[in-house]
Image (cartoon, rainbow, N blue to C red; front, side):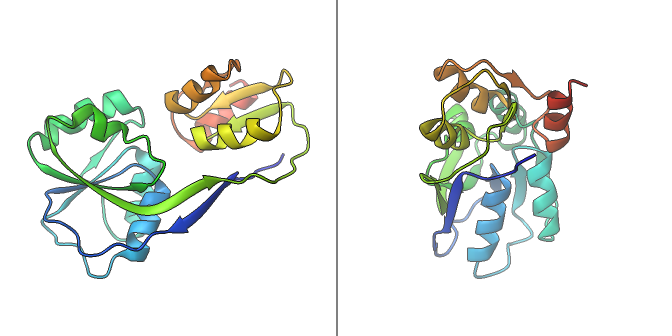
Length: 192
């Protein structure tokens, strides 16, 4: 088994935060880079939201529980989050390459505040031994891998629909894990 991220990450500095009601985190890396760059404690009045349970766990590791935890699926999460945050001010710490799914789905229904906290770029030079199973956790990893290797009939698993869409665009057959978690990815690979 080989585990490798095919993405390079770099922090982006940011200044004072705007006045908001919510901070919505798309990813674990978003949480990590946000708190690395944050210069003062968060106001206890700000509620925190995450795309899914894994991101909520990393947020809690930083001492902040999530008020809202999405399902990991963009459309469903957007609808559920709208029930909590309609017409409110929401800050989205994100990567420069983020698909901004929640922002896009809710742009007319919430007040969006964008905050770039890191860059994520595909690694262009790497070597990975041939594997019978390929597991992808982001569209950017899909792009990086298939920019260097061709599909050779492997079993391919995506962590969620956004990553599966990136594989579909390349016409690579894939399965989507039942949940956007590492455990669900392993279960899909093992056929459980």
